[in-house]
Length: 543
Image (cartoon, rainbow, N blue to C red):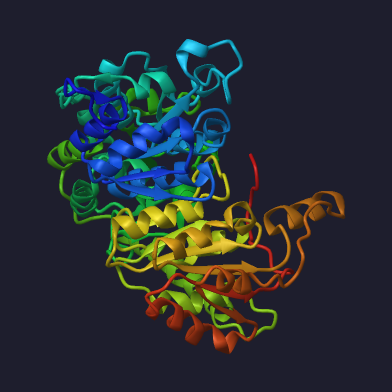
């Protein structure tokens, strides 16, 4: 029953009407009795319910949607274990600055403390990761959902969590469309912009590193204008990949270590100075460091900075374009880095074309990259296998690359792939799996088939935890807890779910198998047996 005799609606409609106001089209979830009223209202109001096999995947799908579309991603999970299963996705969303709203069921208020099914207070253990609250009045549901979503969307972005006691959802109230609070335009730091522009004008060997918040702040156009005006070599990481097309004259990738070591100015925009950037310790000893990000709360405190600005990166970079002096110099610096790019690209060719058996993991990308369209969405869920992809797979548009990010939680790939297929129904969607990572959420292959979501899954199957086995062996001379069963037939697993699958053991069969999968229009899996002896050449594994 949706409405009582007075025309009032149950609390689930407070959720659905709020989601409509927010423009939400998909609710990612797993069935649970505590959230039946939310299901009922969303179904009646035309919001697609995308059900998965584990609440963790629902959370990752919401995070993937948020990062792909730069809008709120929403997951609904049942009480107790439903919420605890969504903790890792909320943590990952927090690390990635992804605007995610997780809606939880909760044991009824009128029975609280008597031992109801799955009775636990979620808010205290969710609060360190997400803005969290319990909604205890049916009439307040819609307004609280909109407010929580707007908080998640406001820099520094991240997850919000609300839970709803079952009796509050089942009760009725008048439901009016909530009014989102007006956003306030943040005033830019004019002195900071002048200072950064001066540093750029004075620099002979500047470098700009563009991260995820460049994409989230819709700053890709102003990034391009800034690079072209100031002739800046730009390196992109995380969700910043593709904000400058990989084939743009000022887009660089392979020479980053050398560039930051030799630069006299390093501008880091939209990403933390974390382990991915050597905590800022790998920069040249004479390099001045500038940190720009979406919010003052995100500015690094552990690195001496020549300047910093926290504010919307689209407007901030537009202001820098106007403030810097256009230059035609730096040709020697740019050519120096381009020489390194070409040398490293040439050095990779033998492995990209390797005829070795078992298959060298780079051969997978040697065959895959020519088959990808410029707007392909590529998702990494793994360790060494995905590290190679990060090096070799180019991005030509923003929002087309997803990986776990600095929290590094595996098992996110299927959720991201579900979101990508719904967000970009006309694009290729490729999910790159390590054979360790597929163990976290392999049952979601059934979700892809059940929802008829054409995703091409590629498993780099080397039968080990490569990211751990090789470093542990280097440290101790042996390894433990790093072996998997070799040659597992993940292709047969996909076929059992009704999807399309192939096993590849010969490198010459790779290209045709990948093309068949991409062209099939079906959920597909290509299980590639790769060489366990090959280790990704990394300078640091942890810190």
